[in-house]
Length: 241
Ligand code: GLN
Image (cartoon, rainbow, N blue to C red; front, side):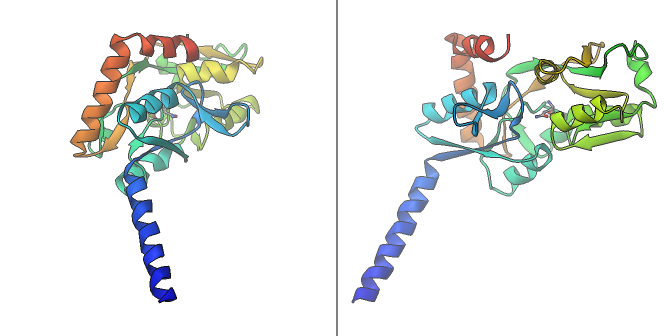
């Protein structure tokens, strides 16, 4: 009898566990991309940022508990398609190549690549000057893809910070990175500077597994209402502007 009760208790626990899972929104990110996602807070190990505040609202609007999982940027789409996460919130640019594998929300932020160099380096005046240069990037990003179009000397790191250190240590000529995170990294670095070149605009979207129409609709509804009621602008001023 004891055994039966124990087994029953166990399966009940398993069942409740399952039920709870359905009420959790598991979001994958790469928390090395301030101000969109980074590790900080009072405890020093909280994942926070602009994207995190957006997905908090998505979870709240849909009565779900938010769980954020930190991983390398280039493993996010794999994790999504393996069902380990429900959504990606990682300053991820909407590209046709990615759209072949995931569904994106409506675009929520316009970004662009920038060039970071050591101060006083005047060798990069135009996009053409990227040709053949040694470039550091974050692995699997649009900066990485673009750098390879110009040069076969591209070194990719798991975080923008590591790519920046490579530049600071003079092992590359420049770094290609998204503008707001580059500006954020440079706040604490007096030796490097940021240069804007006429690169194309990029648009960030939240990514979901293909065919998850319900979640996609919920996300777009939350984004639209945040834009309409001023919450979105408040987050922009809190984190970016
Ligand atoms: N926006 C860039 C991309 O999608 C970089 C994103 C990131 O490093 N988190 O590739």
